[in-house]
Image (cartoon, rainbow, N blue to C red; front, side, top):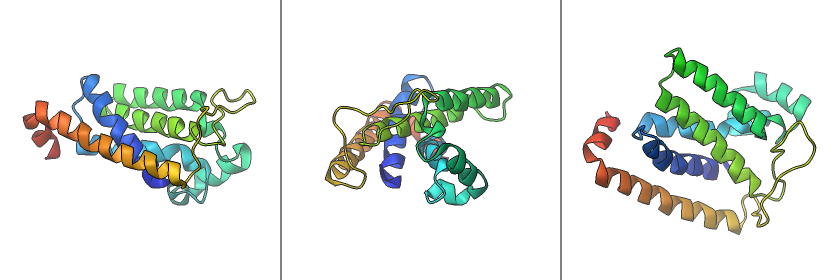
Length: 172
């Protein structure tokens, strides 16, 4: 998937999931969900996040390749554990840690829809891909993008309809 689809999917997942778990969505949470949605591609020096963190992306690419360890369930659990430690030490509020993790997981789901799939059970060999795949940047991804865009608008509308005061408060 492309940069914009990952960001859109991460934010679209963040709003309803965080609300369901009792953390009202915020703009800062949405921004962190977008960041989390880009984080797995830190193993690619040419990606948006990889270019900003070359000191990490180049070694990750060298040792694990693109869509290697950072696209696995094991690494997602590691990120979740680190975020949990940060939230328990009060360095990062729980709702914001959750936003990053939701974004991260959304990236793995989105890449599992592509023909290349992801090494979900790394370090074990094999890649996981859904039966119906979509080529990155292709027409199928454009359909997904517009469905996500409608989903995001509906999620925002749903949240603001039931929580207008909370939403206004979260914008400040």
